[in-house]
Image (cartoon, rainbow, N blue to C red):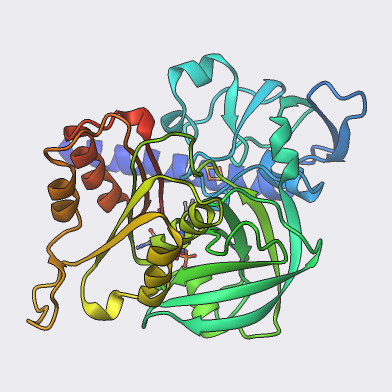
Length: 370
Ligand SMILES: Cc1cc2nc3c(=O)[nH]c(=O)nc-3n(C[C@H](O)[C@H](O)[C@H](O)COP(=O)(O)OP(=O)(O)OC[C@H]3O[C@@H](n4cnc5c(N)ncnc54)[C@H](O)[C@@H]3O)c2cc1C
Ligand code: FES
C-alpha cells in the first residue's frame, strides 16, 4: 500500500514537472504577443513595442529606466511601478515584496510583470532624469586588497546631476563562462559638484558576476555603460547631529555626503563610525583627515572587530555598534539623524542601537548593500 502511494506521488511529480518545463519552453519559443502599447502617465502617444519581455526591460529598451538594484532578479523591490491595467494578477514572485497597501493601489514589480497586452502605467516624473551614460574608465586604484576605486569619465552625455548618496547601475561584459550581462547597483563616491565623472568603490564578492568582472577584467580606457542616478539615500534638512555608519565599500556614499556637507559648509556636528575587521580593511584615512579640516565639526571613529588585532591599534575595538552605543548614551538624540551603508547585518544591528537611544525611524536612513 505504502509503495503504491510513493509510486503515485512520484509519477504525479514527474508529470507536473514535465508539464511545467513544457509550459516554460512553449512560453519562451511559441508565445508571440505581437505589438503592444504601453501608455505612461496618460500621455497621448503610447510606446509601441514587441511584447514578451518584462516591463522593466521593455521600458529600458525605450530608454526609460526604473530604479533597480538587483538587475531584475526580483529581490530588491526597487522597480515598483503603478500599473492601472493589463498586468494580470499579482505573481507569487511579487507578493512577498509588496505591502497590502501597495497591492490595493496597483503597485507591481516591473521586473516580474511580463508585457503580454496593452498596459497603462504611472511613473513619477523624477524618474525621467535617469539616463544611460557612455563612459570611459580613466582610473582603477586598489583601496584595499578587495576594494577598488574606479573612475568613469562621462562621454555621452557628458554631465550627470545627482544627489550625494545616490547610486548608478553598472553592467558587466561577458567573460569566461559568464555569458549573461548583469546589472548591479554601486553608490557614487565622487562629490555631486563633479559632474563629468563618477567614482565607484567596488568590493570583490567571491563568485560575484559583476565584481569579478571589475576586479579581473576591467581596464583603464575600457568603454562602459552606466545607468542612473537612482535611489533615495541623500542628506535631509535638519539642525541636529549627523551620524554616519559604514563598513567596507559602504564608505562610497558616505564620502559623497561628507563632500556635500563640506562644500556647503553645513554647520552641523558630524560623527562617522566605520567598521572593519583588521587594519588592512581601513582606507581613505588621509581623506578623513582632510574632512576634519573642511567640515566645521567632524569626528571619524574607525573600529576593528578582528580577534587578532595587535596592540599597535590604539583605536576602538569590537563591532561598530559598541562605539556607536557609547556615543549615543547619555546625550539628547531628539534631533540626531543617522545615515548608514553596508551589509544588511550591520545596518540591522545599528538600527536597534539607534532606536534604543531615541532616534525615531523617520530619522534613520540607509542603503543595505544586498
Ligand atoms: C543601493 C545599493 C548600493 C550599492 N552600492 C555598492 C557599492 O558602492 N559598492 C559595492 O561594492 N557594492 C555595492 N552594492 C552591492 C552591489 O550592488 C552588488 O550586490 C555586489 O557588488 C555583488 O555583485 P556581484 O554581481 O559581484 O555578485 P552576485 O553575482 O550578485 O552575487 C554572488 C553571490 O554573492 C552573494 N552576494 C551578493 N552581494 C553580496 C555582498 N555585498 N556581500 C556578500 N555576498 C554577496 C549573492 O547572494 C550571491 O550568492 C550596492 C547595493 C545596493 C542595493
Ligand atoms: S529590479 Fe529588483 S525587484 Fe525588480
